[in-house]
Amino acid sequence: MSEISDYIDDYFTGALSAEEKQVFADRCVSDNAFAQEVAFYLGARAALKAQLQDQKQQELAATTVPKAKVRRITLYLAAAVLTGILALAGWWIFFSTPSVQQLSSQYIKEHLQQLGATMHSGSDSLQSGIAAYNNKDYQQAEAIFTALSKQEPGTPDAVKYLGLVYLVTGKYDAAIVQFNRLIQYPLYANPGPFYKALALLQRNGPGDRQQALALLEEVRSNQLPGSKQANEWLKNISP
Image (cartoon, rainbow, N blue to C red; front, side, top):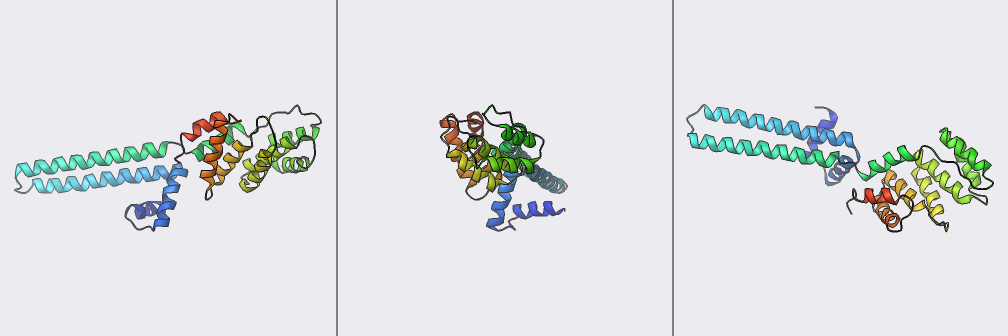
């Protein structure tokens, strides 16, 4: 077997420690390809079990076992195969449902790769930063937004865009710092909580999931920017 198959087999044969089992379960939720490997393993395991049981049934049929007993064995075999199929279907349905982390990652890819122009006064430098961002020149965009985030006016936009630069480039700790700054501004419709939830979900560290859940609930309850996505994603998060 391959290394990944050995790893999966170790889980189902009880060879992993409690901590390793938790890592395995978390990976099944966050890694769709791995979840499919697990589903395939379960299917192959069920098929092999059914084949072995069928061989045993044939061996029993060749002996002088009473017909009534053979009939019972056949029924047990059918029940075992059906149980395996239902278990496999349950695993497949569970793992084929995208996690909230996958949904948030997809949102970033679909909605945060391009920034719209702002009509804020005195925003020539801000527009230059937006152009760099849209051209995926994140290093230049970071330099521009960092400088602007320390100036007035227009600081909230610069802080927001700087946080987005860090978010799309995978610098989640830095992104969270900027979104925390953004949350402090008394804006009418503050996107800070939603963006911070995105960063937490992508970082996926200890306690991040719970904190993201609380932020998404806040976004949904207060109808803040991102409330539509928050409402959908909360359905995919187990408290």
